[in-house]
Image (cartoon, rainbow, N blue to C red; front, side, top):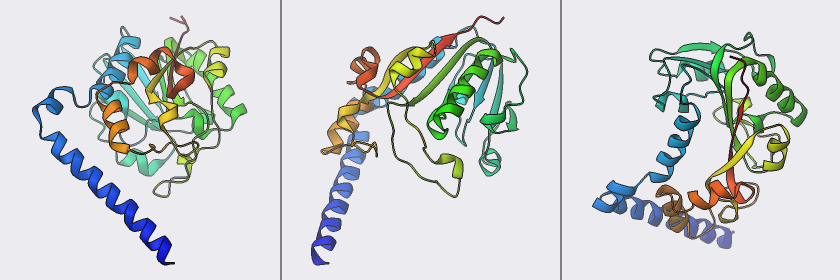
Length: 237
């Protein structure tokens, strides 16, 4: 028991040290200029893919939709299966609908661009494939999806059963479905297998991802990236 207690104490101390490093780094002029560059690069990719899409449908949007950070559209439709999540969204001018991704109520060509970000991994493989086929009809111009590269373990979060991961997807599978695949969020080798947590030293890997040092490698080598970002032009307009 003492060994376990000491081990947890060391881990907690390492996490406290990491938080202290983050706080000090955030106050520097250098970090104010380059901090968060990795995130900016990701959203720049999304905006580039959705350029010319006046209506965007964000399926499985969660309570903090990434689509609400984009400036490419005139109309936004948010959809999620978990009602308590929908209640927490700061909707702005968006239209909100509570619906399960496995039984989408949308007509053909309802939106120029359709987003399915961090959703596929929550579906069984066959159901996920059926959803991808449905998105080809729902979108007028383009479908954009993101998912972990391979299986990453995750259970329910805050009582939401839809947060559980039940499948893992590869770049080859998405390419086989007609998608062009890029990588993002750094390289997979810097994460622990299945959990997706950073290997030590965390501060080095977090810094690399935040300032975009690893994004170039991830984009051009999706099979080695931690996350996959894929798109498919459908031309139903």
